[in-house]
Image 1 (cartoon, protein in one colour):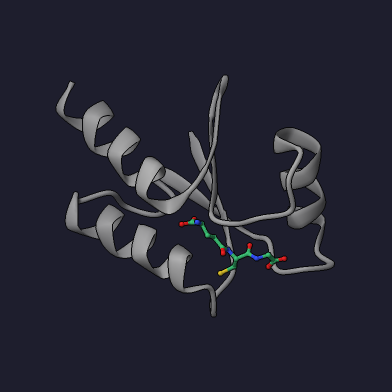
Image 2 (tube, helix red, strand yellow):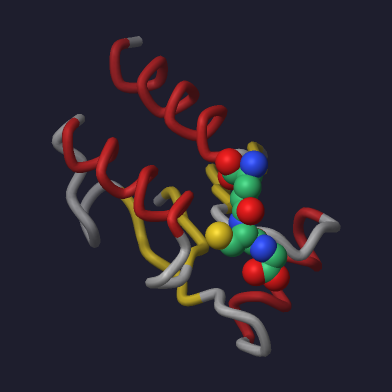
Length: 81
Ligand SMILES: N[C@@H](CCC(=O)N[C@@H](CS)C(=O)NCC(=O)O)C(=O)O
């Protein structure tokens, strides 16, 4: 399942979540939310997997992606494929 690393007060994360919802994606069914505010194990995982301490961060098997707009575009394309 896709994992979206995020934290609640991050506006870029909120944008991604809003777009995911618009696309009909359901938490726990289509993707998993991982808490990744600073100092959390989730944030450590972001750095380990992607090399940068930034969210939102998406992991979909081999695909690892930062940048809210890129994430939304990737998932939109994946959904319509
Ligand atoms: N251009 C990026 C900006 C992402 C961004 O600025 N994220 C902030 C949180 S809202 C961040 O990770 N800052 C570093 C930090 O929280 O340590 C995007 O659109 O995803």
